[in-house]
Image 1 (tube, helix red, strand yellow):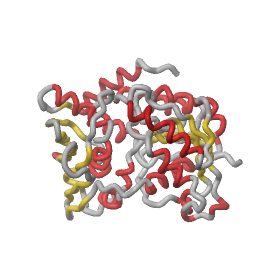
Image 2 (cartoon, helix red, strand yellow):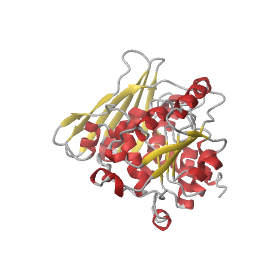
Image 3 (cartoon, one colour):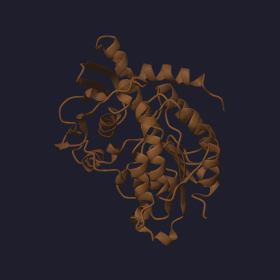
Length: 346
C-alpha cells in the first residue's frame, strides 16, 4: 500500500504556518486512481464522531475527495471517569468493527498499521500522553475537540509536534460552515465584530467551554481571527455570555446555552455588510478537510489561532471566578507557555 506522503516532504511541514481555509479538497480535481492511499487509525471510541467519520471514509461509494482514504484500525480505550464515555465504548466497538475496522490492543500497535491518525478520545486530559507516540512516529494527526484538557497541554502538544516535525491540527466542524467560510474569505469586507451562539453543556473535569461551547467559539474565531486582547464572562445556571475585545476595537461574543432551543448560529458585522454565520452543516466538510490535510500535511487552521481559542475559553473561567472582570489573553498565553516548558519530555 502506498505511503501517505514521502517522508522528507512531511518533515519540512511547519505546523504553525497559516493556511487559508478552503471548501474544496484538491483531491476532488484528481482521479481516484492518482491519489495515494491513506490508511487511517483511530484512538478512542467514546464519541459519535468516530462512527460518522468512518461512515464517510469507509463508504462503499466514496465521494471523490475521500477516495483512497480508509479507516483500518482503532484503539478503543476511552475515559474511565466520564460516564458518557465509558457507556459508549462497547457499542461503538461493535459498530466500528462492522465497517471493516480492526480493533487493536495499544496505540503502538495502531501506529504500525496506519499512515495517519484521528485522536478521538472524548476526554481532552489524556491527549498529550496519547499524542506523543503518534508525533514521534511522524504520523499526521487530527485531534478532535477538545484538543486537550488545558491550554498548557494544547501548547505542549504543538511544541512536541514541532519538535518531531509532524503536522497536526484540531478544529470543530463549525469552522467549515458555508456562511462562516464566506465571511472568512471577505464576503462582508473587514469584519468589525461577530456574535455566535450554541449549546454549552458542562463537564466538571474540563474548563467550562471546552466540552461543548468550543463549537460556537470556533466559529467566532474563524470569523474574527487572532488578536483577542481581553475576555469577560457572565455566568448563570442556564447561560454563559463571553465577550472578547480584539485589536482595533473589534468586539466578538459567544452565548452558550443550557436552556431553550439548542441551535448553532450567529451574525458577523463587516464594513460592506452583515451575514449569518456559525451554522452546523454536518461532518462532511470537516472530513474532506482532514483528508486533504492527511495528503498535504498542511493544516486548515493555524497553531496561533487554535491556542488563542483555548486561551479565550480557559481565561473565561478566570473571569467568572473573579466576578466578570476582563482577563488579558496575551498575558494568559505567556504564562501557559512557561508552564508548558516544564512538560517537555522530548
